[in-house]
Amino acid sequence: MSKKNELEQEATGPLKGVRIVDLTSVVFGAYATQILADMGAEVMKVEAPSATGGGGMGGDIMRWPGHPPEGAPADLGPIFMTINRNKRSVLLNLGDEKAREAFLKLVATADVVVSNIRYEGMKRLGISYDDVKAVKPDIIFAHAAGYGSNGPYAGLPAYDDLIQAGSGMADLLPRMDGNEAPRYMPTIIGDKVSGLFLVSAITSALFHKERTGEGQFVEVPMLESVTSFVLAEHFYDHVYDPPTGEWTYGRITNPDRRPYKTKDGYIGLLPYSDKQWENFFELAGRKDEYLSDPRFKDYKARTKHIRELYAMIEETTQLKTTGEWLKVLQPLSIPAVKMNKLDDLQDDPHFKEVDFFARYEHPDAGGYFALRPPVRFAETPSNIRRHPPRLGEQTEEVLKEAGLSDEEIAALRAGRKAAE
View 1 (cartoon, one colour):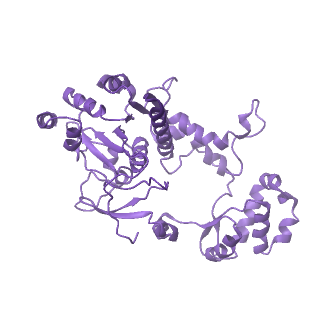
View 2 (cartoon, rainbow, N blue to C red; view 1 turned 120 degrees about the vertical axis):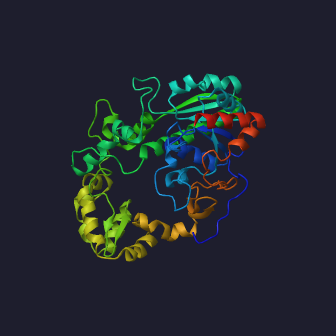
View 3 (cartoon, rainbow, N blue to C red; view 1 turned 90 degrees about the vertical axis):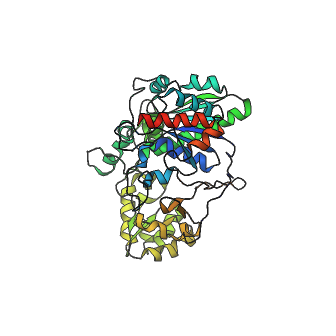
């Protein structure tokens, strides 16, 4: 964070040379395409101008929430800044025939089209898979959907709240704390988890295309993606037919599973092996008490009595400060970490050393932080090379690359102004 960070000029990641036409907005798609862009892909974010009477609030709706610095453009809101770097913004009203033709010329230069527009809407606009395949037969068309197209919910609107409700995720907190009211996780987890599935799907399709030359239609539905994410551990004994026990992995929905209070804060702590548990309670001066308790004699017994074990941990951790615990736990390889509040993250010594919160100067928004790509490639490192774009900032640049003439671009600009 203390280092001076300059934008790198060239892509260095493993997807260098891959061109993606990005019709996504909000978080699901934009989060995914930023990861792909960090990995080296050239991402051209196609955004719609504001509708008549829209007050100028066009493009990705995530441009507008939040509080940009005084004097900074309003279209560079904080969420947009966080998930739209390394992209170029192209402003096109795809309801206009000339803009549609320009879009298809752009597609002809691309490897991937990714969209979260409802598919029936894409058909009406003339930009469905069949339409783009006609101009680029080997295109990969990734559709970020709310629900799988072969089910009764196909085509219905989907947002993170709805997906958390429909996937069983909103049922997890009630099972943990006994409060029967279903609740959403306080993060846009449905969008982001689905975004990771979308990244995986696109890179897999690119691998297939590299081997065979064949493009394809790829569908990534949020409901199915998030439900598979939730049930990875929480299907539990209901994975059998008939069920042999409960829903949910009890250790995870245990209400005592939380950071433990110390003398001066909180600590994340999870002894795992028999030896780690023994060493932990030896450090606390409670080894004999622990070893003589049949509830904790082995993994199976500890799992059955996990609430009592976690309660015993919390009694113990309050005997030392967080720093004192880390000093004695880490040399014994007992998993432990200081619990950070959001306010603490940028001062965490690990994040500071790896320059995770990299500071840049945006030409319009001023100073801002970008989170370094977390995945590390030894030979083809991801990099940050473009600031989050203003709405339509690179329209002419991108369309010229796609082969449009100055006259065609001028006509598009005139048509857009007339519509506004």
